[in-house]
Length: 187
Image 1 (cartoon, rainbow, N blue to C red):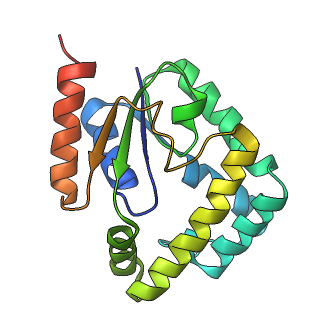
Image 2: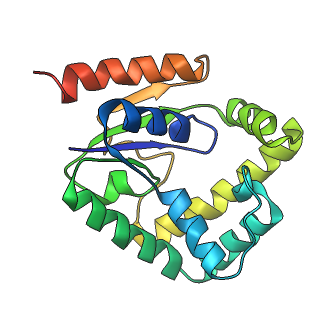
């Protein structure tokens, strides 16, 4: 059993994936968390929630743009874990890199995602929107160059796409559970 949850920052993917891991007793793995761990090993300072949107997170992103070794190392490790099964991923790459998974994409507008990030990280809406745009442009370029897919635009690998714009996290969780119960875990 392998499940991949994808979505751009602020779509709700980390929140729902952690809850799904607990409910279905699957190991939770996050591509973003694995990249953060590598950043810390490289001497970057982890400053808590909202790290990716911080100046330190953006500095690491700039380094990742120049040298893809971090992304390649994380993706190799995640693929190894996927082959073992019984795992759920919060990842931007696994839906394209791992064939045998059930894949969910959580969609939300940039404005809604910025609103969520602003609330979570104590930013203004404008700051959150600006950092999202910059981060996503750079991240999309990394994955296009590395793997050839268009993050946030190519939905071909996904079994289910859910618009989370008007949904609270509990509603997203319940809907995804309903899909998984009826499609993946059906008896």
